[in-house]
Length: 126
Image 1 (cartoon, rainbow, N blue to C red):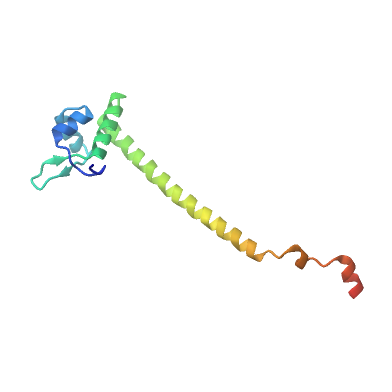
Image 2 (image 1 turned 135 degrees about the vertical axis):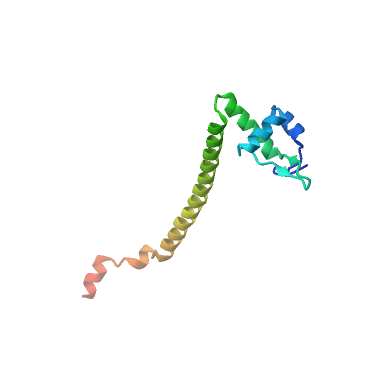
C-alpha cells in the first residue's frame, strides 16, 4: 500500500479520482493550488494527499469561491493547522513545567509534625 504522500497517480487517474478534467489539474497547478510530483521525464504524479487537496479545492469552488479565494482559504487553513500544532506543543511544554514545579514543591514540604512546635512546649523552655 503506497504512503499517503507518495506520488503514484498519473494525471488522468488523479483527475478521475478528484472528479475533475485533467486540464483543470493543470490550471490548479499553474495557480499554485497543487504541486504534483514529477518523474525524471517530467510527467506529473499525484499522491493521495494531492487527491484530498483536489477534492477540497472542488468543495470550495462548488461553494462559490473563485481560485484566488480558494488559494487564500487553503493558506489560512494551513496556517491554522500549524498554529494548532504549535499550541499543542506549547501546552505540553507548559504542563511539563507545571508538573516540575509541583514536584519541587513536594520536595520542599516538611511534614507537619516536624515543622510545628506546640505553643505550650515553647513556653516551658523559656
